[in-house]
Amino acid sequence: MSGPPPSIVVSGAFDNIGATDLRLLEEAAKLGELTVLLWPDEAGPQLAGRPYKFPLAERLYFLNAVRYVTRVIPVSGVIDPDALPATADFKPAVWVDREEAANPARRAFSQSHQLQYVVVGTDALNTWPEPPPMASAPGKKKVVVTGCYDWFHSGHVRFTEEVSAYGDLYVIVGHDANIRLLKGEGHPLLPEAQRRYVVGSIKYVKQALVSSGDGWLDADPEIKRLQPDIYAVNEDGDKGGKREYCQQRGMEYLVLKRTPAPGLPRRSSTDLRGF
Image 1 (cartoon, rainbow, N blue to C red):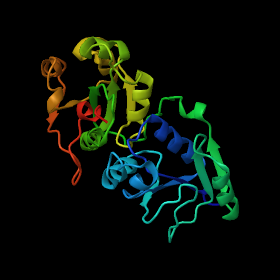
Image 2: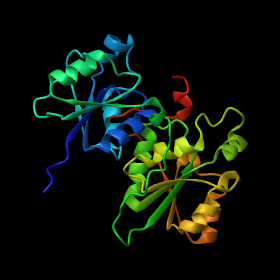
Image 3: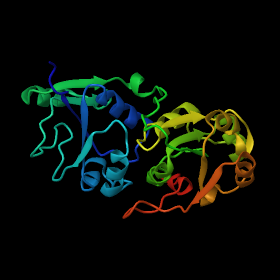
Image 4: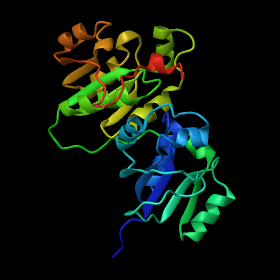
């Protein structure tokens, strides 16, 4: 009989979480149950020379929504970037690190603490595999949402969390050419495969897909294939003939208010571009 899976750890600030961060977490989770040791706000000025862009509560909320993460432990005190923060009730077996951060000091720490030290290469962190569909109970309604999801933030996480309460959530991200058509040159910031990967890494999303149509209803081919029961939008997305489209197809049209998770600031992709 095989024993329990090894305890895997990743440690860091995870400020402004992006696709390469999620790829690191995915690769780490392939080795066992993944725990993230999350650095405190005070580590920003200490290590980066500036405050983190996102406060601890927001970084914690985002990480807890990632499908690859088993648990997140916020740590306190002065952070040594070349060591794992001490925790009272958690003893990892494997420290997973990214190639650009790996160094002899971290290897020495791992050896002295009987830790396996695994480094994930930069090339691996810059590939965007399609996350497989999440499992779900039979008989649930299908819910679809659409959008660009170019700068994915805690507000998007909250939206997927709220919408997933209505059924299995399918997110259809706009393909690159259509985003340029709707928003102009310079958009999107990130390619469609990367945007799909980020959205599909959130545990509230059953599956993320890329649209293949055009205009405000570029997801029409995917919607016809999925046959969802509900089309959900936030208030900003209530446009482009979506309401009439749902009436024609006999789908419920659900409009949600844009509200942040409790205790978190309101976020918008437009504002975040200032970062």
